[in-house]
Image (cartoon, rainbow, N blue to C red; front, top):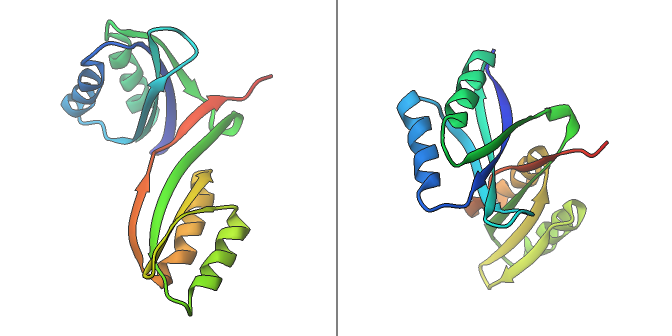
Length: 160
């Protein structure tokens, strides 16, 4: 059975590593559902959060292939029931005087921020778990979504 798996990968912050990781996935026919990369608590290091769909054999193969890359220091498979996950979405929605109040009310329920207002649209920012973001988008779709930009999942294992 294919399920979503989250990998936290500590890497040396060297030019070209992202290209190597993407190439590895492409050559092996693995699909990256989401990939976020950023500097972390260690100097000259970055942390990648990679979300991959697959069965156990596929994920084990992904981990083995990543581990062969010279700049990969550590690979952690995050337990979905024991991690903290967040994603950021920016969503621009058509608005008018008739619909603006209802959309603002929806945003308040989800604790979304309004980050841009024009005569014809509102742009919202929301951070949260993927199901929360999906529910927010679903409620705004009837108003006419113009654009959606999602960062992809970022995650940490919960502290004990």
